[in-house]
Image (cartoon, rainbow, N blue to C red):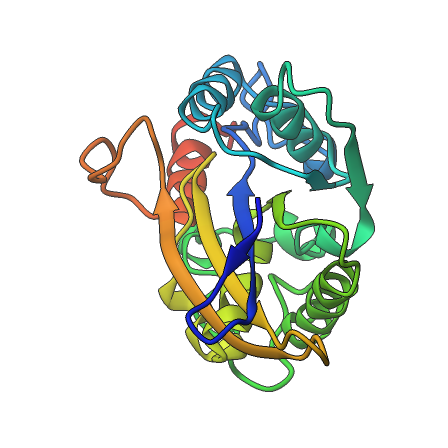
Length: 240
C-alpha cells in the first residue's frame, strides 16, 4: 500500500508485535533451563489467532521475526493464510540474562523490575546482555530492513525488550524511555516513518499506536506489567 505524506515524502509503516503468552516454568513448577526455547502456551496461540483476525485486512508486504520459537510461532499464526514466508532474523532476539546470575536471584523483585536501570551506562539485564549493545544490534538490524525499499508495510514480531528499543528509536529517546514502556503479550504497535523522495533519508518518525492488545484493549484484564507477570508466575509456581 503506497502512502504519501503531505509534503510528498514516502510514508512506510511497521507493525511491531510482541510474541504471544509463554511460560518460563515447566509442568513441575521449575524454571525452564533455556528461556530462549519456550513455545507459546495455548493462550498465547489464541492471542495470536485473535490478533491475526483483527488485522486480516492489513496488506503486509513482509513478515520478519526473531528466530526464537515463540516469535516465529506467533508470526506464523498472525499471518495464517496470507502466503507470506516468515523471515527469521538474529538482530531481534530478546535480551538474555546470565543463567548463573538468574539462578542466584532470591528476590523476585529483581526480575519484576529488571529493566529499571536500562538507561544507566554499562547496565546489563540480570547480569547478562548489555542494554547498550543490544540497542545497537537492534537499531542496526532495523535500519538494514528499512534500507530495503521493496516493502511499504512490514510485520516485525519480536519481544518485550526488543520492542522497547524499536520504540525508543522511533521516539528518538533511545534507552532513556526503556523502563517506561510496557508491552503486553501479542500486542502490536504502529510506527510510520517518512523518507525524502529523492535521497530516501528519513525525515520524520511517528508512533501511531502503542501496546494494543486486541484481547484487552483498555488494560483492565491484568494490572501487572509484563515483567511483574513473569515474577508473579514464578512466585506462584516455582519449587523452592
